[in-house]
Length: 302
Image (cartoon, rainbow, N blue to C red; front, side):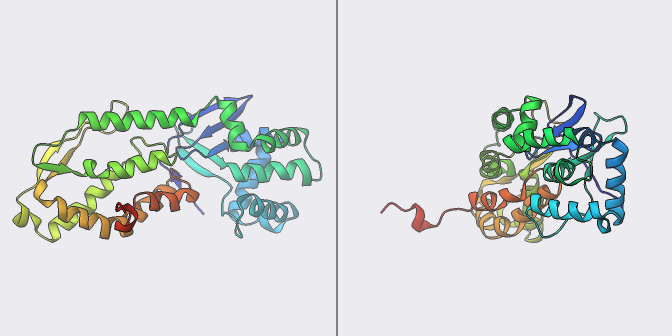
């Protein structure tokens, strides 16, 4: 089976003690296949062959594979095991342009095997397992990379503020960025690193534009206009043209936003970001509930 390559850029990646490790935008950590081999004290070819055999389905029938299946289920707290032990990530940091990234739970399962269950346990695996188990692998990698999630979140707030300061809607009009600020703030508050790869105003704009056209709202509220939206300097995209809508349509937009976009379209957007590796599945309930408007009973002054 061909392994999918994710168009995803690690927020930090480097070699520490000749072990290639990194952090993804959703805060999850990984080791490269070569880094995992070093972490476990085995030859790189051993881990590469294991990964290839696992993907082919031939590893799972052997003694090592059966033990790894149980360990992976335990570490991922799942009844199923993945079809692959790694994901491919596009990266300019690699000679080949691709990183074979092994997610943190899989790293711990394989390290656990070589530390405790392999016919010839490896001292490197035992030592690294103890260090990672003591702190948690994610904290361990954060410390080795000198990475601070709080610094990343502070950067997200700064980028968000820059977009707000640089983009004022024309008098009498509103934009999807104006209306997406609640969602963006919710993502950052729940520890999601928001940069040019996470822009929910784009999703909002696509779905509202379709609704606008289908219902011929130009004839009801007058025509929307195009304006230039300015991105922060660090964004890779060119400053786009976006639609600004007549303020007279704001009430209809907000009804559509609460009744259609939030319950139907926003969960789809979040699922896509999970697939892209930018949001963890554990964050979903909070991200969905955080943007839902409170009921009148919850907000009314008694």
